[in-house]
Structure formats: C-alpha cells, structure tokens
Image (cartoon, rainbow over the protein chains, first blue to last red):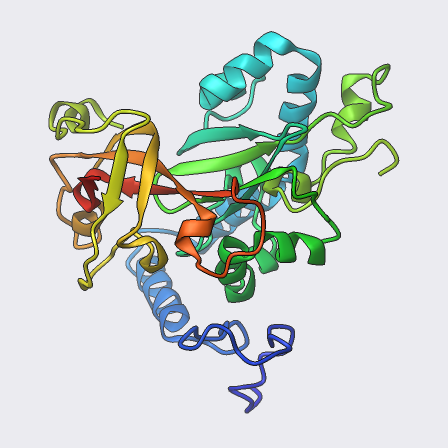
Length: 218
Length: 103
C-alpha cells in the first residue's frame, strides 16, 4: 500500500476543478466496500454456499466475453435490413436470432446517422451491456468520464479524437436504471463490397459506446 | 420482468411526447434519479416497461407494485446554462414514474 490518498494520477482535471464535491476515483486503495466484498465472499465459501472454484469459473466466463460479440451484431445489422429493424425495435430478441445470449437486461440500440451521434454513459455507476461487450474499460467507470460526458460531451469526444460538426446532433444516453445501451455506428464508406467478418473487424468497443466511429482503414 | 411484477405494476401515466418535470427532492437511499436532472423538464421518449422500485429493492423489499420506467429526453442547453454545442443536443435519462410530474 502506498500512502498517497490524493495522488489519483490520470484523473486530475488540468484546470481549476469544475466539479467541486466530486470525489476522486478510489481505485488504488482497498475501499470499505471492497473489504466488505472480500469478507462476504470468504464467509460464503466458509459456509459452503459458494466455492472458490465456482466464483473463478464465473469470472472466467465474464472474461471470455469480448466486444467481438457486439461487433458481430453490428456487422449483421449493416448487411441485413430486416435484422437491423428488429435490433432497433426489440434488441434482445434480435440477439437470440444470432445465437447470442438474450442478456439479463433490456437492450436499447441507438443508431448513428449522418445527423445524429449517440454516446453512452452511466453517471451513477458503471452499467454496461457486459454480456455483449465484456467488462467496461476503466475510463468508462472513472468519475472524470461519467461527470463530464453528460455536460460537455463534445469536448470529451474530441479528447477521444472525435471532432463532431455542429450540424450533427449529439445524444447522450445516461444508463441510470434497467436499460443497457449499444450504439449502432454508421457503416463506413468504402466497405460496400465487404463481407460480414471483415465488417465486424472494424467495429471496436469504443465505437459501440459511442466515443469513436469505425472507418474502413481501422 | 416476472409475471408477478407485471400484474402488480402501477399504471403508466405518460405517453411518448408528453412533457414531464422531474421532481426536485433531496431524499436518502438508493435513488436512481441523477442529481443533475432533478427539477428539469423533458419529453417522454419511450416507456421502457415496469420494474420493481429499486429504492425498495435496495432494502430487500419486493419493490412492488412495479413502477413504470421511461426514457426522458432533455435539451442539453436547458440542463446546463453554459452548455457548449448544438441547441439540438440532448441527454436521455431513465426515470421512474414516481419521480415525474406532468409539465
């Protein structure tokens, strides 16, 4: 353990703090709730309710999920208009059609067009379509992203390298309750002759959160 | 959502397009209505179904009757007075019916 409770590097704002009262991320120390999780886990194992092996297997299952699942969904939507319509209307049912998990939450798919760009956040915690994208990236859980992308999304997107025209409407989706969100990016120009696999390869995790857009060269 | 939750759901008061105002309340507990959106007026984007109230679930109660949940769309320029961007930019937030009043 190191003794720098205020040294939360990577999350300094670089200018006078615009969010007074916002606590820094506490991912470098064992927090109260982390200690509690360990204590509860050890008790459950001790009492024979769960086994360490069962927990490890669940973690393994979680780690096996990756954004490749989501990319497969997006690529199919790009080549199959009927699938796309269903994905936008009844997201979970569309996943089942592809042989994927329906998922524990209702999926809301939001479509990027020439006029609209969507970006997803969970300001309250870190809600994320994990069954489709795997674990969220650390920045998605950071207080910096969560507090800033709702009030200055264009500035945050520029930091990700995405500079949007004023003619494009930016829609932020705050995942505060029972919905989980997937951004359906616009199909990049120059991919008209591509097959499904090749298309899926350019759909990155960030494109499906909405902080990036796919390109034919990526 | 379970059949039991559907049966024990509060009737939906709002429809897509309705203008609603988020209650301003400073209450303790497991609240899923973000602070920044309290007191703001928006438009119902869609009804998402009815779900057991998380404010009750957090304390191991049933959360029934289930509360209708909406996606409510707000104009960014109205939520943040110093917002930099297009007047058309929006923020959509999931809000339970008991946090909404007609506007």
